[in-house]
Length: 587
Image (tube, rainbow, N blue to C red; front, side, top):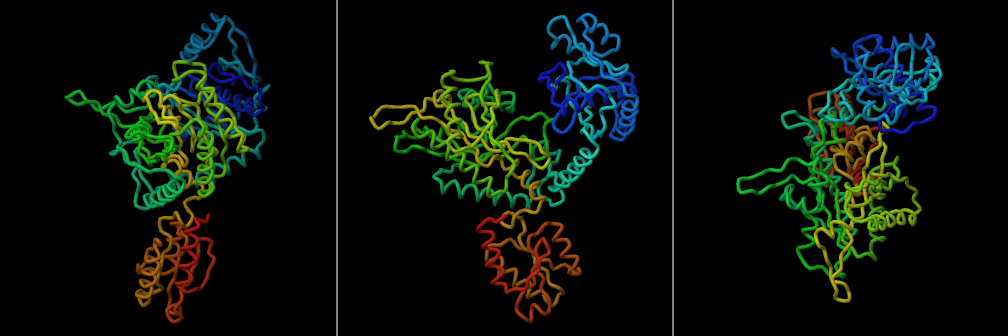
């Protein structure tokens, strides 16, 4: 982008349009709030934002007035005019305007004596462009919301007010996007999680520390059973390890030195011992590997765990279940010979694909995350990294999978394959990973006895096939809008007697369904059956069974599903149908 920040200049038409709309926003804000200080305003996916320091707080109720001033500037047809100033001239210009943030960017980001600025009427911004020709070219935009943002992403810096907006080439494009946002808001996992009583966050417990309510815990339990059973069937060995370890363990792994900013402060005791909430599971699994002398016959050894991890995410980055401070990761570490490496990487990819297929994760792509040239950030030699990156790329190519490369996105100990998933908001996040690691086996001196009796170093593969329980759960809430597949839903069947006279019959139906290991609730409230049906639908329950006088007489049940399809069948036939659906994990 054109700002003097760490982004590339782009002449993509949509990029230019949104960048120009960000300048339009800043021009309108400086007219309405003459003493405002402005930071940066880049285009982002589907829109733009601009950061401001207001002398008095503004609210979202102020956005219509700002948007109105933006439209007036559009009507005035102000051109975007580029000018090149000397460094001294630029400093003088922004100093006269009291724009301290721009002065800081000139000092930190501008190289040489030439400084590019853009004028939009009286508004001037430090910028390399490009922009549209005139404000009249900005035909379809909308301001969306406010947020807090630290200057340059540093929590030690002042917190600014970020105004988000969206901009499109034509009004019809904007209308379609606003409809998309409306639908995405309906599916927001934070909203549905509250409505369906799946999870909660309470400030008394702490930000980023979700509490799983009974319904949400039920879904999580089913997810974990599915994951563990499948991994056991594929030769994984499931273990349990503690949430804490001595800090020395993470010094040996390198996490304390290279990942320390994401870790909680250690717990220090009078005897000098330091315990650390673990940010990862791998050192624990390494200790288990080292608990016995391993032979080549024992390899590959696949140690798996749904293990709790703790990472000190900054408060401004926490989002529902998507980014939290405590999470349970579907984690595994595979110890194998170099000759087994390719098959193990492929197997890890195949498992992630299987989990995605069953859960209904559809919009995703592969990213091969490699290291950059900042040597201090990484462990190991260039030759080791090249071997690992080549092995990952070869595995994807052998499976006929395309991928992009993410330079600088690797873990500090090795490159990785990231499964990049898009949620209903079109936000991209990393769900599953497969990582090759030559470093930790070296740092911990891992060995196995080779066929010739010599001691050799195993290769380590880190993999998270289903991701964290929190993040995948948030995705599933939004993917299904709370209407989970029957096998996952907290309550699979609600049985509602028409009147008190059918209570005993309904209770007998409930008993039969529970003996079939279905999750059933009896709604015996003194309410009309229409109310019971409506309440069950609001909770997205897959099946509602109504028992009336004719059902009792005929020895059947009246069943309706979430789509209001209705059948009349025996309890035995219904049990067989639903248990088959659950067993096959149908979507």
